Image 1 (tube, rainbow, N blue to C red):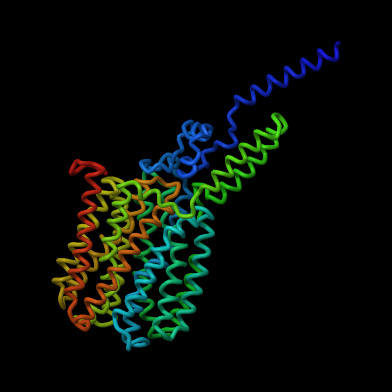
Image 2 (image 1 turned 135 degrees about the vertical axis):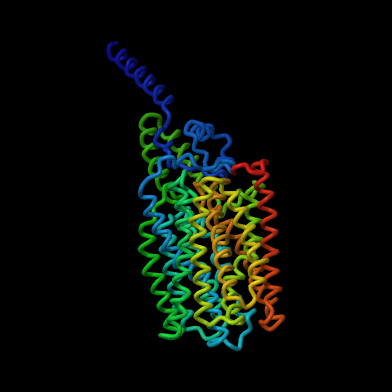
Length: 508
């Protein structure tokens, strides 16, 4: 009788303990670092636990209307290390991409002088398109596997592509190596460096991003004249090999310093698996195998439902409008960078003066990225985007067209266009963060740059074809094309501003 009473008391105790356990939230699965994809959440509407976790913790960063600032209220000093590393990655990558005009001028006058301007312009176009068009894929790669690994892989690919370029003898080989392959490697390094500063800053987000992307202008300022000097000193092929070694020497150490504040997809999957195994063991001990396996299957379903490339952000009209703005601005954006060196030489400037003007163009771009990035923290990122696109378009339609053979006016154009076109690059990531949040910023920024790539794929070759109509003598059609197509982007930016804030001088 005593044995039966003791057994009954023991069973009642276990039942009470299990009841307590049932009411305890599984806190091991609810940490601030957890980020659920919107597809996973939409596909698990019957999973009330996940919805409760999101409501309780307020971490629905993926919602398209969130500004994504909730998890960066505590800005940390290491963020400036990340900004510094991103600066140098931007310097070597963007400086090389935007400095293609120096290579094109060399190709036209030396190694590939039997090819047309239109044919050679495709090298630079494929370079930019390879970098930007692969953005949705490489951005997702960075979000899933980590920014450090992505940038490291990019450094290796860029170095290999430039070495292969130095041995090329045909234009089609340049298309493959200096164009597509380099662009892919650049994309793997570029989007982590573009996206990471926004994860570390809220109040000074525009300023921090501006400093990081100013590296692109600084790189152009340094690389363009240095590359031209090396062409004369050691020859074309050894110059390209030296640039390849510079990529490895700069990007690899910078990638080691990259550190994300938002958990990567792969890291999240590993953590969830580890926590679920621990939880399954605990729940098996207390409840049996059923509940632990059920929860493990639920999390497995979440992991399986995540798409490799997520285009759901395009369902938001405002984000779609941002992609459209980027497309039209990009149609005109690279034309001055590609064709201004030959324009300057054809209008009385020496080779060294033309190279110096391109350097000033890139240097002004660096200044614009920092200054307008800082301004966006005070007047709003979309207002800053509008100012940048208006001034960049007008500088082409007014200053460049009127410049003629005047070196001072060419200088004025380089300063104005460089400043405001550079700020466009700095502001786009902050607008994307404004609209979509920061937890998948590399992915959505990649989508925006996919629009930029499409515009570049059209804009620069069209500019080259218009220039070929006059055998490289009349730049007016190219200038009108670049300025007017950017003006369409201005009109769409006005529309986005009033969609966000109908007040004319409202901060947005």
